[in-house]
Length: 169
Image 1 (tube, rainbow, N blue to C red):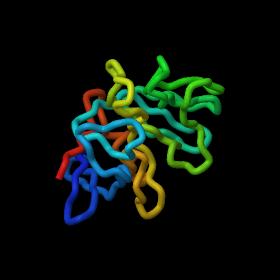
Image 2: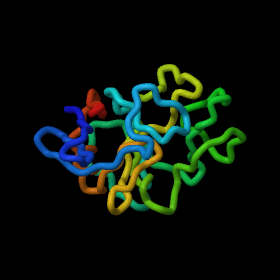
Image 3: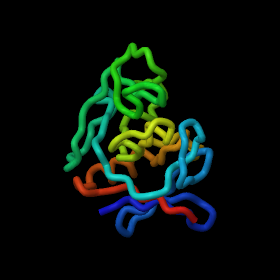
């Protein structure tokens, strides 16, 4: 079953089967032609690749999805000029990257989506995840974000063929 992200009555929602929850999307809105740094969430259906999570903060529910605990030295390369663009890297890392081990909690559970990864096209966008939302669902940098309970429900119910489908209004 897929997670369907769409606009309903002026608010973003993510529906998993008959259940819908509020969600956040990127500050740049939706784009079919996403580029690095635009803050946009790419439209389309993206396969779920795996889950990365903070085992010190979160007990991952039983899931059919591949999963690995995060370490303090995990990062994600977002440098279009780097040969490891849009892949997980080990910190310290010379190329521009973001930390996956964060204080704020939004990356306590990261569902890695198969956007621009087979193979990555430099500059077409990186680090598109489904992750935890901040209170009030403020915009993300391009990801989709859900409340913790809702994300855990998705993780529990998703299967290896599940996708995150982001529909343009």
